[in-house]
Amino acid sequence: DAMVIQNPRYQVTQFGKPVTLSCSQTLNHNVMYWYQQKSSQAPKLLFHYYDKDFNNEADTPDNFQSRRPNTSFCFLDIRSPGLGDAAMYLCATSRVRGSGDQETQYFGPGTRLLVL
Amino acid sequence: TQLLEQSPQFLSIQEGENLTVYCNSSSVFSSLQWYRQEPGEGPVLLVTVVTGGEVKKLKRLTFQFGDARKDSSLHITAAQPGDTGLYLCAGAPSGGSNYKLTFGKGTLLTVNP
Image 1: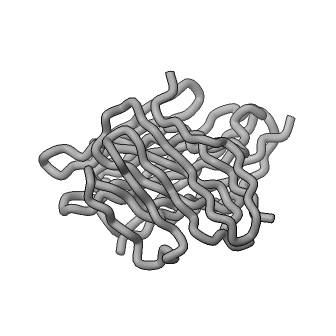
Image 2 (image 1 turned 30 degrees about the vertical axis):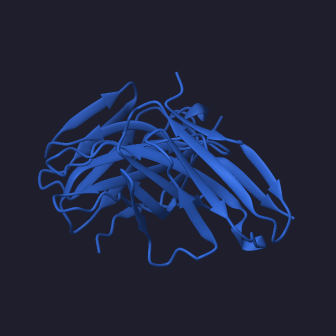
Image 3 (image 1 turned 90 degrees about the vertical axis):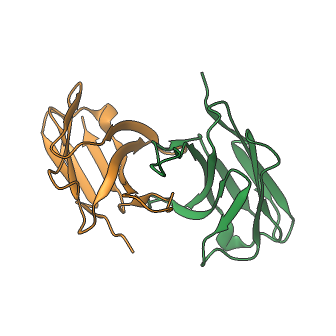
């Protein structure tokens, strides 16, 4: 059974045309992450939500925004995609216990974004 | 800033050979996760190691967590073409309020028939 679901799996957009990628989870995890991954490289963290608290990475461009309307869903908005934003976008979730210890992160299948 | 050095970055071997991938750090991790990723897919969790000195086996894959929880290795015995993929190690920080994984750069493994 799918635990972290991403839609769509493939997204084609035009240069400068806003696009939204979605992620949902059935794990009831309190932390959700968005990563950008380029060919055969490690995923690069863009931002994450701990419950409703948004945490942006210092080097994430302003062009990238995120929303988490509830525990299960998280969205990645790219306001004006450039050619350099073509990549695989991965959503992941994990549970952080009250002790502060982080449990395993589980990834979705990813959305491959193509910018024309 | 925690760093996780993963080696080798690229590995191309023949079917039936053995191989080992290493992840090393000067930082202590509360746990370390290994993922395998196939082209066009998200990383799939292989194993999480938590205890220093822990050894876990998954069929032909053997994972070890260093005694000091600063390093880990993945050993594959008798590699098969289906093992081809990008292997990622990722460490979870020890303590504090940092909920981000530190990733190694990945090992791109190709197993030729």
